[in-house]
Length: 260
Picture 1: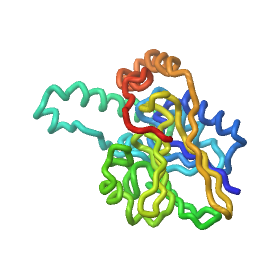
Picture 2 (picture 1 turned 120 degrees about the vertical axis):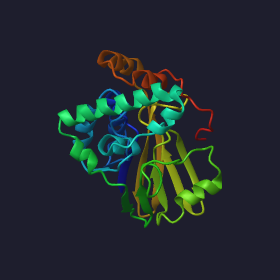
Picture 3 (picture 1 turned 90 degrees about the horizontal axis):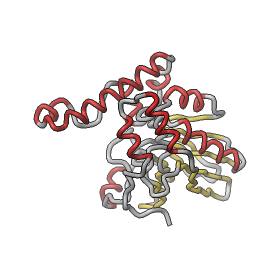
Picture 4 (picture 1 turned 180 degrees about the horizontal axis):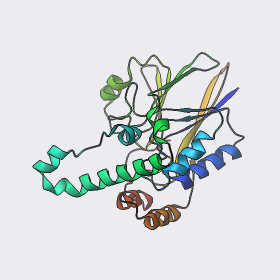
């Protein structure tokens, strides 16, 4: 029997991470932890989160798009050209730049940039029944991009995931839990540990159990004190606190279909 916990999109939220780790322990623990990207940026505790994750036994990591932003200097839109064409975009451009610089500074001061820079793009494992498991952040070969969302046409998803040479593909990135099958592939979005978009505003993750007879997976939710996260952001004067707090207050909830 193999038990694996899959987490993604922790976004520097130590309180949400603690809630998930406590729930994993309450379920009897796991043999491995797969941390599928977006570990630190856009949250109040990037250093504390990496300290906790790196201490987990048998932990596997992949890079997310925001992890790349911190180490490579890439940024999400809008870029400088877009701001020059439309000055109304300047506040967004400023907030993104300051948020990434704040996180980069915290990690640099505590010696974590090399760790983040070395994160691989994917993790692979063959389960006891022969199922080929792939873990990535956005999609096979991509640490970002459109990812996997309920509102995407099936043909778009097929184009993004076909050819992955995997039977079970676990992703994060879009902060929405999904469990679906397409063309013989089992596609699972973990949901997000932090910056929630689901109505319950919980931290979501996935538990997998596998043996020679097959595998079973379960999406799980862990509640945490979002007001305490807001207080952390305010006390730190985090440059992106307005954006992050909008998630904590449920202002980013989507009307996409949730798991049955």
